Length: 200
Length: 182
Image (tube, rainbow over all chains, first blue to last red; front, side, top):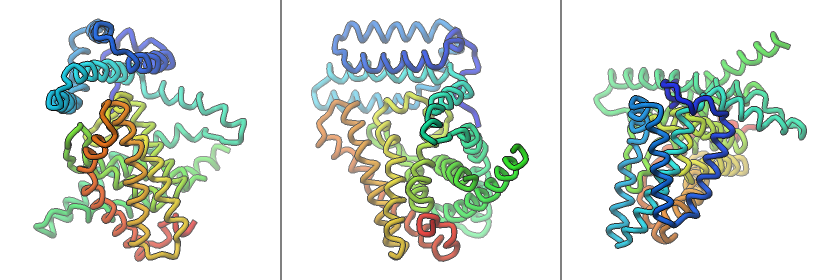
């Protein structure tokens, strides 16, 4: 399973994840308080330049990752044109673009492993109140490993359904898929138990 | 402990996998997917805290940039979009679904499954969803509530499917419905 991380290395990859998340949080709070068109436009242009600095290939990747939000931007703009609040709509769109583009930049330039290490560090103090979350890394790995597995099972179920019926399978595949997931969960639990007993 | 970890992880994965069933994107950029069916099922099958944690685990991975949301989307940007509130509502919704199932263990599985899915999987998920849209879109609450009504018929169908699956599980694999056994 791939992450949305950029394969093209940029200077932003070297920044610590915690800094990038802090910048994102602070910028989000500030941007939603701002109403000045000029400052918002300037911020947007700065962000645009930040995305251009690593090169054209990286910029193309940014655009590809942002494509899914374009239809929804268009709908918001049309809605504001329809309600006669064009200026308000434009300001809102620029705010969105700044926050979503910055969040996208953080996602693209932060390794999944670094993010997981950060989360594990953040939850470590919870041990003091008896909440041991040392298994977090394991559960992240289990989910990422299981999704392609479940998709393959869905494909096979779909194939076997179509070989027996002319109708589309629709929701009927969900029940056998859940049965498979439950069986798999039992096998995985046994495997974790075995591994822990070996390690301890 | 090991069993809980496995169930939580597998149901997070199952919810993600349900997102790869074809989707329809309606107004305001919020897509209708089978992933909310996964949220309902996680809560109704695993119970309150396991179901809630399964959905929480999924949204943490989405936030970390793993493309597990319908259509292969992921990343922090989603949490600032109009559907961000709905994502935050998933673990709360799954928790409430499980809580209802745990409190009415003797009730017919279809009836209680439907009730839990509607309350937890629709109403509870919609509250932060509507609030998130209200914060982001700067429109009136009434406007927002009207606009999300378009998703209700689809979600009601998912609630019916969820309750049918729970009924089938109670009939053929009763030991698997942890919320009614645990």
